[in-house]
Image 1 (spheres, rainbow, N blue to C red):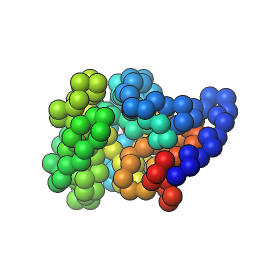
Image 2 (image 1 turned 45 degrees about the horizontal axis):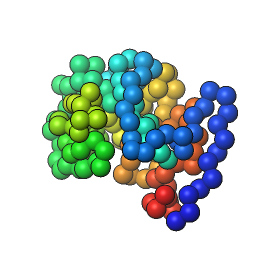
Image 3 (image 1 turned 90 degrees about the vertical axis):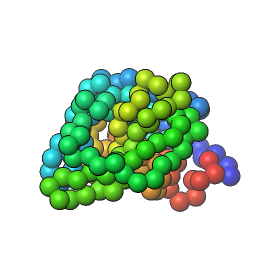
Image 4 (image 1 turned 45 degrees about the vertical axis):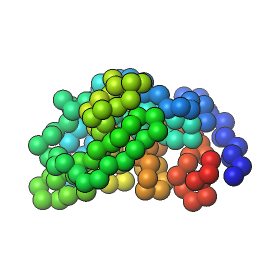
Length: 165
């Protein structure tokens, strides 16, 4: 598969093609919020964003900034070549559930140990995921959990025909 031509970022934008491979986690003080069934279930300015070539950032929120009373252990696991094995949460807010909509790394690889137990969300499964007040769009496809905002340009992996990038 031929790598697509990156879109040139405008002022205040980042290209996902400038992100590193292997992935990295960097702290961000941008306010990250997650709303489900009308309830703010996460609100933090102490998150990590994971950056990887061709992907929009995924945000990992410390469990102290998440309303854990709404979280139930999910089913299944997945493996990230960079971060290790992930476990999942199902969110249940006032009877409305989103199964396996959030994930975390209980025993991450050494490079990602700083975000142990931090929780990431699939934005497509939430009412809203906000970055500094902006509502993020979900990364295309059902596998990746990136948050697309106006300051990110692609093309972004995840949509049809992008598997081999």
